[in-house]
Length: 281
Image 1 (cartoon, rainbow, N blue to C red):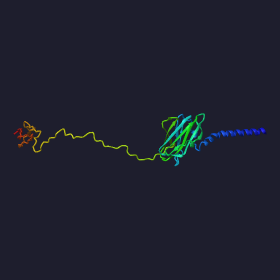
Image 2 (image 1 turned 135 degrees about the horizontal axis):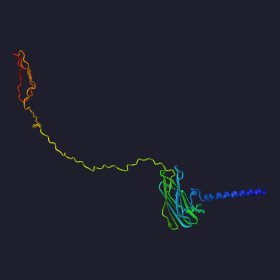
Image 3 (image 1 turned 120 degrees about the vertical axis):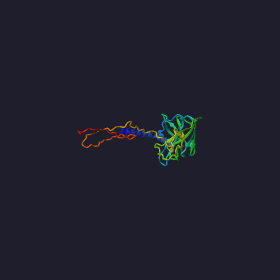
Image 4 (image 1 turned 180 degrees about the vertical axis):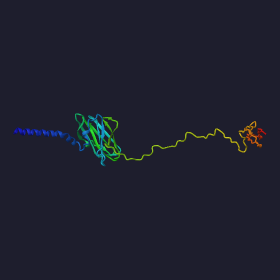
């Protein structure tokens, strides 16, 4: 019976210890501040300063952007951070927090310690500055601040920062917070991009005078005929083509003749021949 109680007690102790290990990182983070804007996804810290931001409550009237600046890992004798908003936003200075953060074995932010009061940052609606000294080894300085969006018609919002560490000034760099679902633009009528200017003709038409001249013959002067009709008269009158033969009877019969004439210019008298056959008397 005693051994059974010991076994149960041991199991309960191990369970409690496992529970403490599971919640300890969360308790340590909570001790560093009340906000946690995506810290689980920070990933491995870079060897140079970095900046990031994303949109919260996207598409809602109260949407805002938590901006985050991370210094290089320590040790660092001094760190100076100057941040400036780039339009359409305003810093909520009451949300600004400064942390020293211990890195785990993989270089990921692990334990957050809130040092906002000690850092005593300066903040306005459009920018902030933070100074820190003696950053320990395997630590980084992180500054987080919310920016309320004042113009909700944009898909991308930007923020710039300048960082100086132990006398080394890094070139200013920028971060962007972009909507996961772009806004549908409202169609607007754009002014014409070009103006039509009439082009003068490159050729000029000049009337060409006629290449031929028509000359008319006046009708007042008679024109001689171009052709002459020539009549060919027959050279010789043609004699009658028939001969009358009379058979005498008791009473002489006057001859009957047939005259065939081919007209000429001069009338020709008929020519006839009479042949008489004598009777027995």
